Length: 69
Image 1 (cartoon, one colour):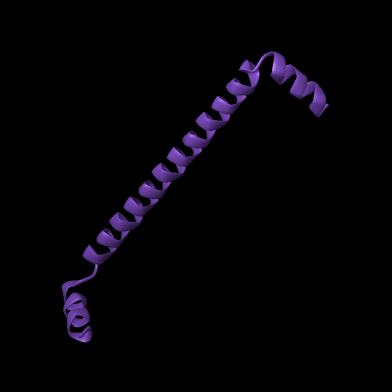
Image 2 (image 1 turned 45 degrees about the vertical axis):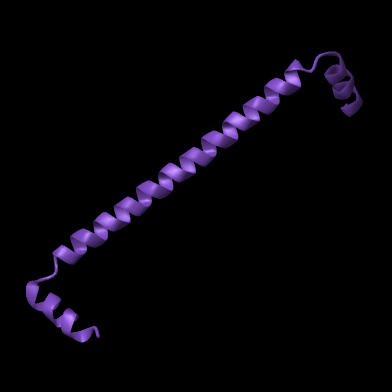
């Protein structure tokens, strides 16, 4: 099977180049998607922490400030 593919690649390299470029496009798309998801998750976590901190009553915030050196 591999000798058949090699003989076809020697005669016409375009299918191999097309497959390689498709692999590159898929890999770059996956990397971009993972970066986008990472940024989205970190922004949601930051927003959640910001809202959670704002929801604490003022007396507790003052107690937390005194407790931390």
